[in-house]
Image 1 (cartoon, rainbow, N blue to C red):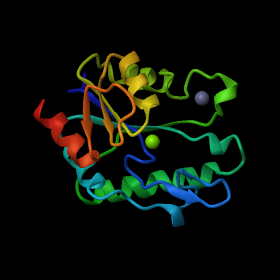
Image 2 (cartoon, helix red, strand yellow):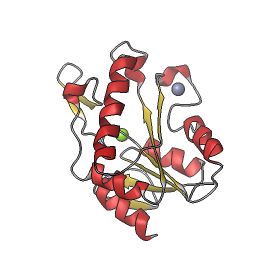
Image 3 (tube, rainbow, N blue to C red):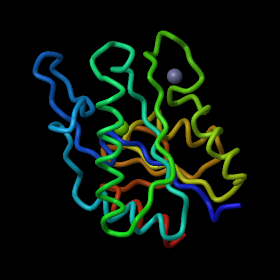
Image 4 (cartoon, rainbow, N blue to C red):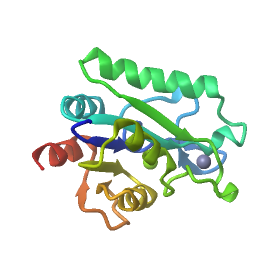
Length: 175
Ligand SMILES: [Mg+2]
Ligand SMILES: [Zn+2]
């Protein structure tokens, strides 16, 4: 039985979004060259992992679209893990949904299967936290009964708002 689980979104929460000039929108990193950390995010994960199980839960529909390989996805997650372990932190789980929204799967946030799988393994009811930059993170968090923190700009209805993951980690650690 763990002390609680903090579920973190990846893109826009831990890693900076990447501007795609073809699509004319911001998207997640597709390879190591595109990986850059949002300031303070690695330290925040480290601090959280001293008290909580930390899990990264991310939607990666580019896998289904053939724009992202599983090899590159693994490399990106290894890179995040490396940075965190180097300063003494730990990420217990990386979980991803590879599907596009039209598939109607049960794992793409705001669906909750990825969260529920981890909760079952950890045999953990409480406390649960979800931190993310999107409304789908907040919705998924509410569905699993977690406290939710949305990173600015906030367009959902989270329990707390924060400017970044470092601020979110301080909210979690003092509650
Ligand atoms: Mg995000
Ligand atoms: Zn899925």
